[in-house]
Image (tube, rainbow, N blue to C red; front, side):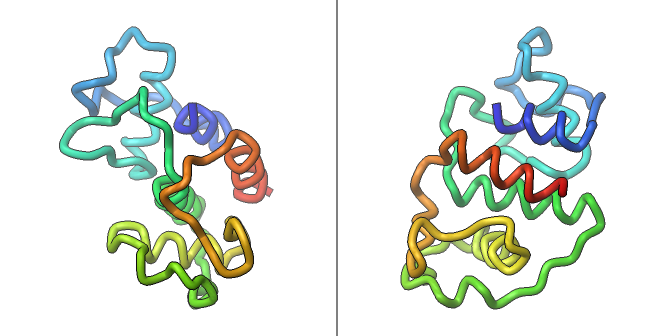
Length: 133
């Protein structure tokens, strides 16, 4: 669902089959593949895991990639305020920092990002609106 929202927000289309677990006849296949073609999503080990929920870390990576796709540059350093920063995985740390610094994402509290928490629909909608406006 999140990939479809991003693809629609950015008006992306096309893209060949990128992931072994995304059948071409699925409703989300075009959106997922378009996002992958533009470098917005990358999956893991050739798989997209379409049935999985998206964590806040994963959302941050997708949003940071979309921000870059839009040719926007974020500042850095805003994620330093999070007490759980030492728990950020290497693959997500820079994206979280970029998104927080750009004002696209915030923590669950003033001092905790809680990146392993699932992304809510409200969080997804809010960050996409901030991305495109």
